Structure formats: C-alpha cells, structure tokens
Image 1 (cartoon, one colour):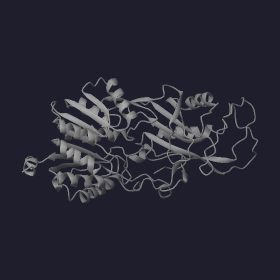
Image 2: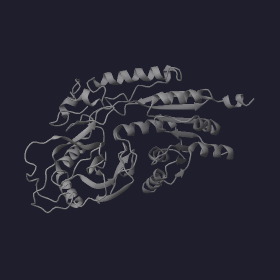
Image 3: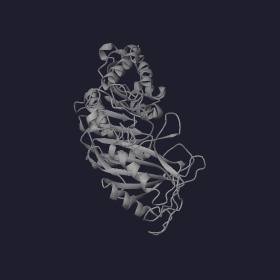
Image 4: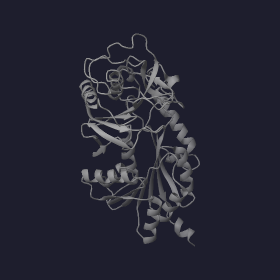
Length: 438
C-alpha cells in the first residue's frame, strides 16, 4: 500500500502491467492485493460476486465489475495519527527554529525539542501501531504531503503528539480532504484540548508551504476513545469547508460530512444506480439512508419527478436540504426519521412510491425496514451495498416476498483491497401480491 519513505508511486509505474512495489505491504496490511496485477484483481472480484449471489440471482443478471483506469492515489480523504516514536539523539536544548511554540513563545527563543521523533502514517491492520510512511500508493499525493508538512512543523511550534496510553500530548490526528473537481483542500487538526495559542502562526506557515489549502479547522477531542473526531470545533483559516462537484452537482463538505473517498468511482456508482432506476420523469422515489442527499439529489436531477430523502441523523438532513438549495433542486425534500416507519405511514395512507433507493451501512438493513419496503411495494428497488454478504441476505428476504433480482453490478470502489461495492436492481414480480392475498 504505501510506497517507500522517499515518496509515493511514480506515474510511469502505473501505466505498466507490473504492479508497483509497496515496501511496507505486509507491515501495513491495508491493501491486501497491492502486489497483484489490477486485471487479475478485478477477475477475482467478479468470481467472488458470482459465488456470493448464486442463490439469489441468475447468472445472466451478473455484470462485469467496473474498475478504474488509474487505480492509484484515488483516496481523496487521508487520515493520519501522530504519536511519539523513538528517542532522538543530540542536545535537547538545540534551537527548534523560529516561530511561536504551542504556548505562544516568541521568535528566536530556544525551545525544547521533543525528546522523541514524531510518527505519522497509518495503523497496522488490527492494531494501533503506526506504520510510518511518507508515501502511499492509494492516497492522494498532495494530501499525503500535507500530512508530512504538519508533522515537520510540530517541533517548530512546540506541538507534542498525542500519547494514547496516558491521554497526554496535543495533536491527535490530521484529516485532509481534497475536492476531486474543485481542488479545494480542507485540513482538520484533531487536538486533545481547545487552547491552541500558536494556531494563527501555525496555519500561516502550513498554508505557505502547502498553498492549495483553502480551509483549516481545529476539532477538539479530549476523550480517550478510538473515535477520531470530537463534537467541538472552530475554524482557524478559510471558510471551514470545501465545495466539490459530483455527477454535475455541487456539494458542501465539512469535517463531519460523509463523502465518498473515491470520487471517480462514486460517479460511476451513482450514474449506474440512476440508470438502473429507469427514471422517465413520472416516478416518485424514496431515498432511504439519504445522508447528505447525494444520490437522491442526482436522481432528482436525472429524471425522478419527486424524491423524498429520509435519515435518522438530523445534521445530515440539514446538509441535504442545504445541498438541495445550493443546487436549485426543487423536486427533492428531506425528512428526519426512521425510513421504515416513514414507508409504513405512506403505505397506510395509500401513497404510492415507484422506486426505492437504499444504501445502508455495512450491517445491511433490518428485517423491519425490509418488511416496511415490502408493505410499500415499490415497483423497483435499487440497493447499493458496501457489503455484498449482508446484501445477499437482504435480497433473499425480498425474493421470498415477491421481488426478483434483475441486475447485479459490482463496482471497484477501493482497488487493491478486498472491498467490493455492489448495486442490485430488484423488481416487483407482477401478480405476486395479488396471488398472496387470495
């Protein structure tokens, strides 16, 4: 996965049939197949999908996986922890450099160098041991450079990395988001405390070294937890968010926003899902698990007469409404609530829905949700899944209740990993509900 410490993969390597070499592939473990030629990876994933869906879909329903033309440096969100490493040799009183330290020390004063090096990179699989890397074959190169620059600036400003064992130190993580089409960059600094006296000087120097940065946000997380982000934050530089385009629509992305990390394949995923939905301009669609409204807004722009998005997370629904307003989409509305209850209410009121769009979490849908969907009886269900195993379980439930799986479309959202995203088009079997009522 990551490349050598001297930098990340070179473009010339990507165009060859031979897979680029990752020197810490075994140590990191995040990219299980980075050493396998990409065409072979795709073929293997097609085989896995065929095996998984054998009991719920005819072989004729399976489509070849949609891979990437350029399957490297695709992650537009890069996260790195910071932690103390090995002890440093030399004088502890050497000049740390000019600038204010984290407590506001004046330029030119001698500052204590950290007694240990500062580690950044990624956690080894299944652990909290940092694998230090300066480059990575799948992460955005500019984002990775910003991660390194933050690390390099920390001693100059007296910023101590976080210690998990004792809960001490200041900087826990940096999260860098890069707009795929806009090129805007948001840097979120996750700190173990709110007081950051050197923040202005630190941001000024960070932006000087990485001028593509458009926003810097401080997120405060003082809990001893594996969760990266805390609830409190403040903007240190810029507007505090970035804008990016997806499928022709503009979306506002903040530190807390859910946004797919592979924008290239997200467009492929959503375009294919909308194609399978078969909108003609007359359909009403429900976007369950709507989040910030991305696929629902694309559907509203691409042929649905009306889209109703539902999600239990109030902040996500607020973002969805803002995204609709920002894009001038008037045929989509968003509600806070349980999608299953919402569908049961519509069924009881006799309000028909033509298409159900659903993109649940890895655990899949609950039986209560699926039963509510069957009660509402949409003509088509477009089910996007980040976990085909739970999707197959849910499709078996729907098959027993009058639906047939017509198409299964895999998408390679995360090349070089085991991950597979799948879209299933499920259609109501005509006459089934009438026969079951007899």
